Amino acid sequence: MNDSARIQTTEGMAQPNLSVAFLLLPDFTLSTFSAFVDALRIAADESDGSRQIHCRWTIIGPERGPVRSSCGVEITPWETLDVSVRFDYTIVVGGLLRGQQRADRRILNYLRQVDTRGGTLVGVCTGSFALARAGLMKGYRSCVHWCHLQEFATEFPDHQVEADVVYLVDGRRITCAGGQSAIDVAVHLVSRHCGRNIALKVTSAMIVAAARGPREPQPHPEAKWFREIKSNLAKRAILLMQQQPAGKGAAVRNIAGQLGVSVRTLTRGFEKAFALTPAEFFRALRMSQSHWEVLNTSKTIGSIALDHGFCDASHFIRLYRGYYGVSPAVARQMSASQSAPALQKTRRKIARTHPLLAEILFTDVLSLSSIDWPTDYLGDQDLIEVPSRKQPAPAQLGRP
Image (tube, rainbow, N blue to C red):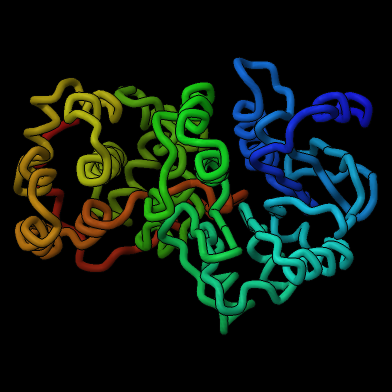
């Protein structure tokens, strides 16, 4: 949007209910920025007019030169930094942490001045790192993506940091993990300043079932068992399993082909390392994902079964009971304190004969978002050996 067009959107109109300045860091996440600003655009006008009536936003920077996003798309700030111009919120959009090494020092100075003047600062994606580097997060809780938790804690050991919620509101600081949580924060601000009806308009227009609140957990943290695998071939195979269309019978053959090895080689490697065939491993992985959804979503059992490639709900329920000792409906109905003893008993039983299978079934679901894709491997001899896992998976677990 050029200057004249932007002036036309606000000239002669009443003061907006919500004003926002976006400050983009080098290698910022484009989807996070675009989701946030589009939520404001939808809220700002009647229907789909896109005029800045209820909400006003701009993009600021030390200079009016393009800022490159992590995907290569560049955005040029509309205005330069001017602390005399007041906004309800200054939103720092981060992305790749390596980009912040090139961040202009004038940005940090500007953020300090905004804070001195009583402004509210919002860090989205890794924007919380920039706020902390400016010395503005001491005494405040910072929300980061779970894959950046260790990096934040290492760099700022005296700060409070959380990675189990989608965003945090702590006085004049708001921080979020990035991704869809940018929409959640935007809807939170729209609801607060423009009203619930306009906030509902945003979620409806963006095809979002509902905006999440600050107490909602970040989904699918990376599983510990995956981090402990040392073989690049095994990791690549498992990552490819995660991306297979549900219910495809040729999944193992497809994975072997993409890895450039035979099905026999892949099968021999999995049996040697995990005491599971690739198909058994894949089924356990899908069951683990299904189990997470049973306990953490309101989706119907039938929908979960179909989403994860099981032929029907009855088949899924039988397999689920074989793995977890109770039906999915019973597991969902029980409170955490009630279901824990039953599930732990089943876990101990499986762990006696197959520790890895127990780890897969009873720990958090693997997320691909922070995994570095292995570029090479030594071959099937590189697959890790897992001691005391020579017994096959329990017979009652059945076929997919």
